Image 1 (cartoon, rainbow, N blue to C red):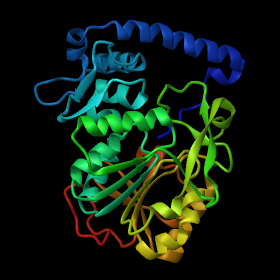
Image 2 (image 1 turned 60 degrees about the vertical axis):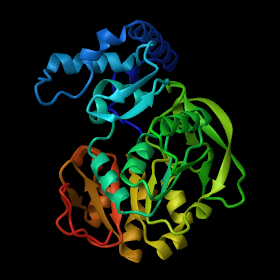
Image 3 (image 1 turned 45 degrees about the vertical axis):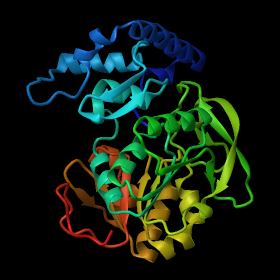
Length: 341
């Protein structure tokens, strides 16, 4: 769930000064936002909609406020545009975005497709569930499916369990471990960049991770976490989601026989600077007959082999994720379609 930005003035400033400025500014903003009363914050929340005009100034204000977190007096909150769902107040970029922007705050182009495919699935595996936002959404869409959510960071896994419980979801099994390509691994080192919050959206394995330029150089702390063989997670899987910060290529390659046997629909994050992952996706299409799509708000856009290898899905389609289906999608749009996926 990494968010990649363009190079800025920070490229020309010593790393220590950048770090101090970033953390200092966040400390001041967090202090101000945390002191807001829920009554003051409430009119500023939500994506707009019927009867409500979202002008650029309000959007800009929300953009600043979400960087400061969630008011301290808020213990739990409903999504402004989906009040059926509730989440806890935690030190999390995902939850901050959800508090201020609702469902439009976190990967809105991916969400309807995840709910749709979950509603058709019987066995779902999510690798890198973070605080459980997509697990909550997926489990609500597929209440009778078997759902396994895997999260290596211990704080994020705990928050995930709390969010599931808050929404009355008992069908999701949370595994607090890192999915590993090495079947002999029982633990692994998880690296957390210095700018991350207590529930990091970026935390990567120290070995064999394929990362965008600069991410590995921002390492702050490292912790040892349990590891689980990815192959052991994929029995009878028919829907698989991977958001594992640079391990996607290794996990897909390691689970090749499971993918061949079960042919699940695959949601996978594809960041810049990931040629090994792109090569695996091309292989899936060439050898296992998968079809690759970029999810947009209203349709799935088919991608050719050259596009899989070379095109940035974020720049061209506004998403970091791709969807791979074992059968070709027919009439792919959000309103529903006929497909073997």
